[in-house]
Image 1 (cartoon, one colour):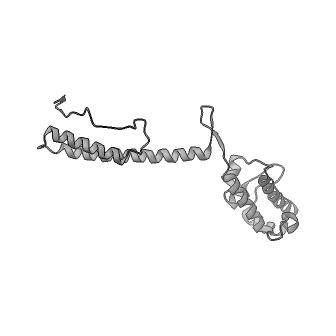
Image 2 (cartoon, rainbow, N blue to C red; image 1 turned 90 degrees about the horizontal axis):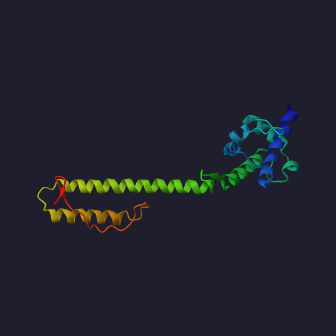
Image 3 (cartoon, one colour; image 1 turned 45 degrees about the vertical axis):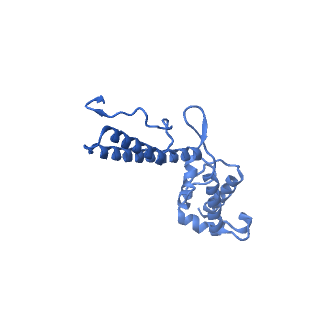
Length: 191
């Protein structure tokens, strides 16, 4: 058992070096597992190594990963294994993973996440603009002693302020609003 564990620890380290060199491509599950040492311990590669407990890996790596194995005199054992895993994770985390959007076009996962975040910000700004505009127009409804001309002017002013404040919102209906064509509707008919 001891020789098998040492062999598997060495194979884990060599596997990490192969990944760094571009000789091995990770699956999605393996990429996710590389985020932590505990996740790395759960990885099993047929013909090379099985999953291993964290404590066993830590204990045997100091014995198995000598300077002869790592090729580096400053990093040996557990520290060498942690550094190799961290390097691989940082490399694969930043990779441009291609994802199909259903239309046959490939897009990078980073680009898709960036677009999603931008869309969420724009949706938030749109909701802010809507509620602010709604609140201001609703406050004008309570003014019963205001003439039609004053009310139209106030509504136009509110719309212009809202447009100026939220003009950077990306929307299919973005454009300049001049307020022309607005009429006060009273009782269902334009006056």
